[in-house]
Image (cartoon, rainbow, N blue to C red; front, top):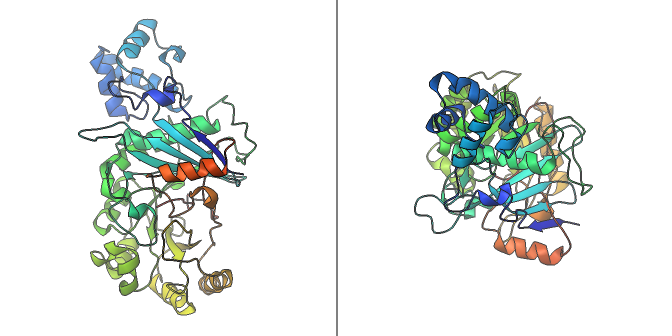
Length: 422
């Protein structure tokens, strides 16, 4: 049974206030530079700024506090100044769904910015397993790429996420699954990892093309990878791109995370249809960018994502062409059974066809796990995310009129190769 919670925040809790117009800015999600500027603005002397940033950084990103009163090593006068000017509120959770398989999906409302007539919304997905937990986060509201097999591609781009909104998804997830020291996990009986940390991997595979929001995504990942805070290894962070070739090398040089390529076809003619950005950056150009990716090695392989579409890209000839295409690139190939969504023209390949395709790739020496679909019952699986989900919320309520929460996917390996929504 799917659990569904609408209006998780009550409008007065930290999760509910952040999106209100006129509310105090939140320090939760800021990088060190902006936190330093915020402290300077309330009168913290220059010589104290580094020390004060370190204090707040630990309270916010190690212990997950949502009140300045909890910062016991910060003087009362400074706590009062901070509370008068700022808050530690989270983004607003509109709906939380929990799949029967333990996957969790959050519909998150962002603050209105500029001339937005209504607060935009994004989706974020958590995929638990016994020994790991992967959080799939979004980088844009909507998407410009219109990949024809992807539900997110049917939603127009609204705007880029700010860095603190990207980090904020991780804070929300850690709140909801009890992933802070001493926190209580949710009592819904659904799967959570047995590991000490419940979020072990982060993948930029949700809504949007992260390389089209390069600077904000980079800043957010610096916060996530900071060893004195959220402290997630860059080998546990994977950025997935549909192939924004000019930014791939720059990302490797400046951010240094793992890389995944949303490939899905082995010929330009077909990829032009499935992933239209291919018309600008064809496969040969994309493959060269992959070969040149900084730090590429057998220990830091590129993951190639390949959605299995019935009678479209799933033949044995396609499998052999894929092997030839990737020759010489340290790579892992994730075969993704297509996850249907309302109105799609595609079908998932038959299971025996997927197995035959995987066998060709495996025999060529590539790890090619077939990703077990996760969270399909709450439209949280790979390619299913779309924040214009009022109808989805209504249908979920009618089919599960009792309770609350849900979401996504998996593969194997030691790096952050799982995904959820792009």
